[in-house]
Amino acid sequence: MLTIDPKIEKTSTIHKYILGAVAPRPIAFASTIDNDGSLNLSPFSFFNAFSANPPILIFSPARRVRGNTIKHTLENVLENKEVVISIVTAEMAHQVSLSSSDFPKGVNEFEKSGFTAVKSEKVKPFCVKESPVNFECTVNQVISLGEEGGAGNLVICEILKIHINENILDSEKNIDPLKLNALSRLGGNWYGKATKDSLFQLEKPMGIIGMGIDKLPENIKNSEILTGNELAILASSENIPAKKEFPLREEKNITKKHILAKELLSQGKSEDAWQILL
Ligand SMILES: Cc1cc2nc3c(=O)[nH]c(=O)nc-3n(C[C@H](O)[C@H](O)[C@H](O)COP(=O)(O)O)c2cc1C
Image (tube, rainbow, N blue to C red):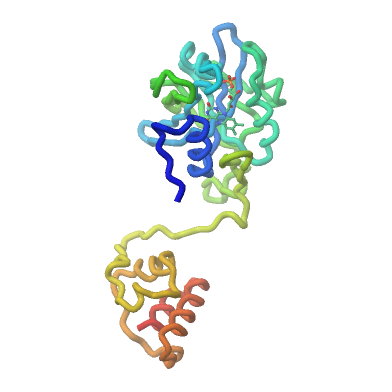
């Protein structure tokens, strides 16, 4: 087991393990503007949504570890208290990476990275035409988490307007994750896409409260064949189901029963898996 004490370890090492472990992370493409009207556009993967009412997004431009300087995006939101956060798709990856270069202050980063600036309705910073979702935001607060290199600055953004390209919606006007194909960031140089083979659906446990793994019969709970995940599928039933006619129950060998149950669970047949285990 690798154990790390942040009080002893170098910031760069801690940073590396946080990035590797807290992954994949969504990416905020932050469009800001300085007092001279120069457009800035930079990606931030220390980012997420935190509230729907009020609608709040937070991202964190950190102090640079080398030189302990602050980023233009942070300077701009401190000056102007406005930002547009755009969602980054896999098709935008190389341009987004290019936009993260340390261009000097005043350089138009829309032009540098080849994105099209579209006038916003509520704020001065521009939306990104190529992004399917743009959030126009006012900055409610900036919370500095420290004065040393590597310290984050929480930019708390309240959404004033949301623009969603209809191309990413399904027939019920929900965002289709495959059409969005959001780019995500992991550790090192790794990025993720939201493609068919990397996504799956899991129904919400609506209405019922599962019995929980602690309530499973001992021989199931202590199975050497079934994983925690498989036990969780069985334990999502409210009660231990009643025994029904089930031909495969003829199998008496416990290991073989569990192997069969495992196979049925992998096919989504949890009721049959229960029957074989009863
Ligand atoms: C995908 C991606 C995610 C990034 N996430 C962050 C982040 O969360 N915080 C941060 O300080 N820098 C992050 N960076 C680096 C900044 O984008 C980079 O320092 C940028 O130059 C800042 O530009 P600015 O000085 O114009 O604000 C990220 C870079 C990339 C490519």
